[in-house]
Image (cartoon, rainbow, N blue to C red; front, side, top):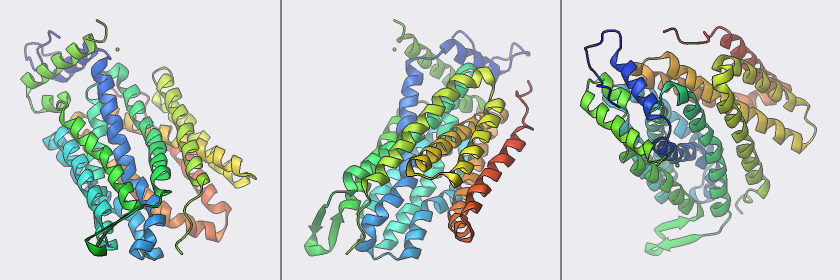
Length: 406
């Protein structure tokens, strides 16, 4: 920790190289574990933004008199909101820092989830979910960049993969919360019926606690040292490195539609549990095999799994193949983020991550619209289309260089 970040005496070593060397001397310890815990809270809060809508629609459609079009719009509103803010948020985060946008994003999710939970009309709920999506995009791209910039090269890929694996755990938590709350029959009336809280309102109130927790936890962490280095704030970088070093050393001194049946929840939890395994395998192999080889292998497995759904002749086989495909694609997403972080410089890294996530949101919107249309044409078309897309991704991956040129 005796390095003087920003020193100009040695022309052969850049300040960023000095920072990476200093982070290497900090090693992996209590600070990084704490960082992963905070990231976990943020991941759960982010996943809940997009997962809560599908669960609450069944419970809320009678209370808010929603038709099919309104339910579709409500499902799409968080993704639409994220499209409006992703690229701008990435640019602003690279310009003004990661931490403030993490606090702004998760704080905004908390406020608008509370508003959604208090909503008495469809219009208020739709608007709240739209702004949840905007705040979701602000916080998510910053969180991926933030955790990577506290790690030296030897552990960065593993932490990024670990962070992405939290989405699988978050899916289990989301399903468990929905199962535990939305299967109840709660109704509290205020002001002679002018303000009514139903079961889905309480579900949203419970969900908002995750974003509140993430906002508080991120506010207690320092700014990204790599961002501060690009701003030439060398004294602050040095103080953060000392804090990380001290923290890590301490470890070594550690009439309405029927409510959804239990299968809806158990199948989602099975998928979430299965999704954990590839992340551990990927984290163990990424440094030995390399990101490119893993991407090619995982893309081929994904194409095979989604093709196999066409010939599955039992519910167990369908759940197993979907679980495998979702688990593999989650690992592919984490590796793509790791590749993006490796090949793009700090000054534009968050903007690049935001662009990648924008394309992902566009893909989600297009997929939700096209899948039922293709399914209506012929059953095999959507499955073979997805398998073809994964095969194309495999071919594109072959052109990736193995390592970033020094």
